[in-house]
Length: 163
Ligand code: HEM
Image (cartoon, rainbow, N blue to C red; front, side, top):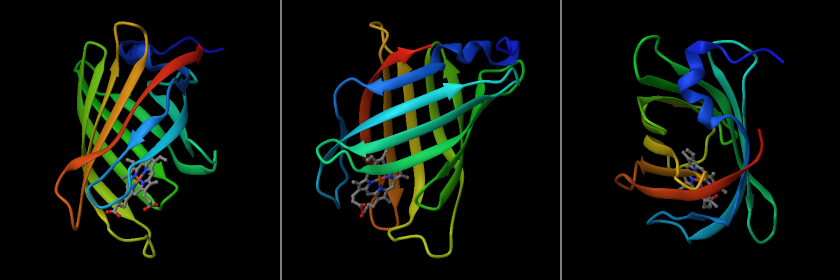
């Protein structure tokens, strides 16, 4: 296995396979609250970038729901982070933000979607990844759509199940 590229060493705390320890909470002013489980695979091949695949499932029916995959980059010599994401809903996004300790705080910089994506369209996304004291990883996602201001959509914690 290739050694971790030193350029992404500050992101090493994200690596591994993570499984939600308890169901995540989905919400939004315009939808019914829901619960979901999610598996994250965050890996590398020795390049100065991390690769990720997130797969979410309905907590009760286990039906596959949301999926996203992409890359995480750090700007050399800075704490500036970029997340490059494709989602199964037909949305693609660039998020940028800062690495502070073991926390990533990101804001969408660019969003695009397929011509036949379902409405309402997302206009803005902000997300936070944080490694907690107890070793769990937490993700919180807020979004604004054409019909709602920035509001929380997702909150979930994960336990690392393999390196
Ligand atoms: C609804 C976006 C991640 C599950 C929605 C809606 C949008 C959206 C725009 C419609 C809101 C409305 O009707 O006003 C996103 C974005 C995500 C994301 C941008 C990632 C950044 C997830 C994840 C799950 C999920 C991880 C986990 C299962 C749902 C469900 C609904 C929903 C169940 C309500 C039913 C539906 O419209 O399908 N999401 N979502 N979403 N989302 Fe997400």
